[in-house]
Length: 230
Image (cartoon, rainbow, N blue to C red; front, side, top):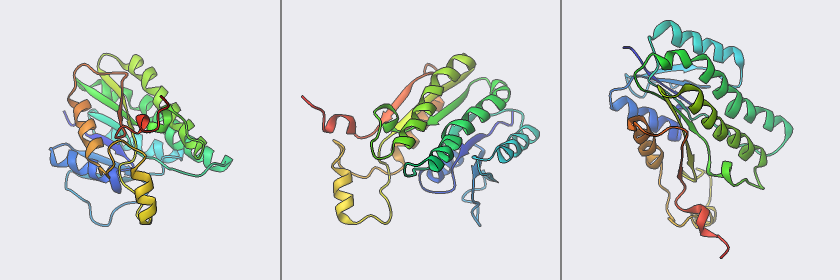
């Protein structure tokens, strides 16, 4: 069966590294992002330009997948925006982190159901379970994305497995100075910049797992323990 993996937000950083890893493993990957690369990163990666905050763009993506493929092996909701607090930014993050995954999961459920074992993976954030006073809207919308793991896992069981990944820091900001680097790394028990590896490893585990659904995998280097009150 012709069943690709849909990865959102796969044009750069962690999303691109994930798409490349899946493509190298032999999967066909449909990369849905706001911007397209001039030169595709791998022949197994097919780019589809879409602003997932816009319903018409999502409808076009859904139609593209339904007309071109028999089924879907997986959907990986990686697209994310880390914006400052404010009503306009809250609306944007809600559309990307909540409305878009909700829409795509519902619309593409039938295609996922045609595959013997399909997966939906929500890339949430470690702040989605603890909050963030500096980015309240971001944490809140990621918490909604995390909650939807439970609902869709129940809705689509047993054929489609639905899980969440809660990463902490993976890649430092490119424009950060040394003080920012040291301060940020010290927030975790494991004080180094891991790169995309932990998320890729977790995605591969979930795609292979036969007995995980409705679960949340935390990959934050022990950040939740670093400043725990005793």
